[in-house]
Length: 124
Length: 157
Picture (cartoon, each protein chain N blue to C red):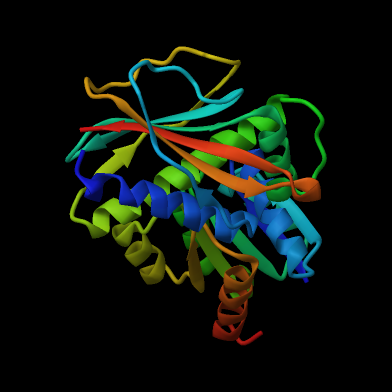
């Protein structure tokens, strides 16, 4: 499974990559914001998106809305990551079609569970 | 200081270490510090404002910081370079987020800024409160059964 990890902070991308590695997902492509992620998606095929919320140029929620408004991209399971339980943001993400969200800190097991649920939601 | 303002920090440190690093930390005896000096060699600092105000610091000695970096990122690093500094900053951010969540459950709403990280022994810091600083040492096991300490220092009013 090829995973797109989107976060403006390189260290956080490395942390997520390290957690993914622990659940045997080591085929990862990175992007530093939503805009960059869209250009990656236009050139590459991925099976899962894990995106941060707050990013410059294009936020996670803006990126989510673009993905879920596109016939092809909306089939890719989309997980949002947040540092805390931001209820309003989570509600907006759910309304915008996010397939699952995960709150930091998370264990590899929790991430795997979130991935499985997100994949099931889009029928993968 | 009311214990209800201390417990969220303890819970946050334990939860984050357990979930992100798979490490069980053991809290030692809290110390009251009258001077704002970093407890370790590398220190993440986060201001908290809202219903209360204060400062949270997460500090490690070099060996502890390198071990945390290796566990968190999966890469080896032999000195306190920019990558380690960034990782300690992110860890501070996550612990602060978890502490804010714990406080919210206790009816205290807080928000935080972007963490800052300082490197150096005995670095002086200005906490934004007039009350003493509480330093909570959390011991954790590193290679060969040796132990290192994460210091969670805060002043909160």
